[in-house]
Length: 448
Ligand code: PA5
Image 1: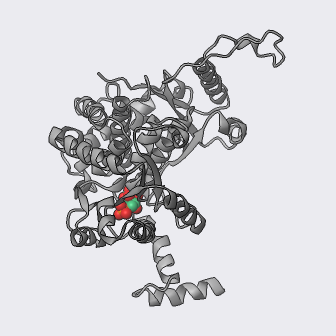
Image 2 (image 1 turned 45 degrees about the vertical axis):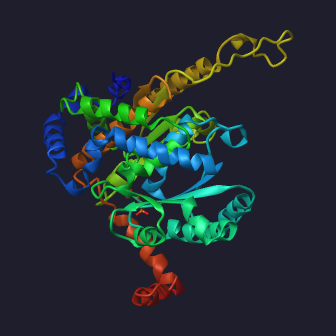
């Protein structure tokens, strides 16, 4: 059963149903080229069938390896950047206890590295690793990305000093390309337990492959249910390209209709700290897929109600080139009620006896009305609760819609040529062999 609901009623003061339906011919075209794999970037469409192709055998293997690792350690460092870690972190954080680091746990505590180059972060991390038994999962499709490679070199060195060179090898899982890259070579040479990232799946579409499933299983969550949810959504979305009947097609069409009317920024707003990294994952998915050729909707994440006390002012009265998509969760995982206070010293008795979820929902509804009145079109996406099955549905929904939306914008949603620019400059500045000419040019630019 599909639980995800898409409500576009509150964009209709800004664009008409005709504006949206005008995209139907384009949607039909792009939908067909997506499913028949004839469009741009069609060598990276493996993610489309991942839910259906994931076998029980594979799920059991991942679970088996996860159980094995859980017996050894209580801390696992996931090393990766961009699509190599955001998906697993999104799911783990959505499902985890908000203070899991301080809680008694059956499953290892997951920490992350290789997503920045901060010396202080790494040094602090090593302080922690000195005190705990730990293992590493190093994830990089190319096997050559600088940030995770640097982190892996440092942490592997720490691991070898802690456990000895031979034993350290049993504390490392490598997830990388089947044949290419430095990490694959190293994994073969050292005999690490390893997983192969499918050739035809790019980083930001990889959460439902071993890239996401291995860390999620180690964190103790049910990867079978996650895949089941994605499979349900895959089947549902594959049944029709009709804007009216297919929510992923509708979301893509509405985004493009708003973009055409000058709404160049989409704010994805959540009302739960559990959704911080899901929002980060969404930002990467849409930002890296659509922002190219001087086009694209800028995806911005906001965490309410916290950001209502900062960016809320801009949302209400700033430049009107924004639309808002609320990622809403109908039910909380836990229940907590406001206690009654006899003297009502804080004047909150008017909400005594009410659940916090109810109050959060009133904040959500009140904000939505205020923003619509402030001329911000509002899309509402809701799931009943944060669990593996609903997250699987949501992830596949966003992936599918992002691909269609990118095609509608006229770009290849599966490449990311723009991310090379900073890397080339950094390599030149670091005097990497082969970058001598750029180094000269860049030094001149920095001097002038
Ligand atoms: O979506 C993408 O392709 C990127 O964000 C990559 O995931 C990111 O750059 C990391 O690349 P790699 O897995 O090769 O280290």
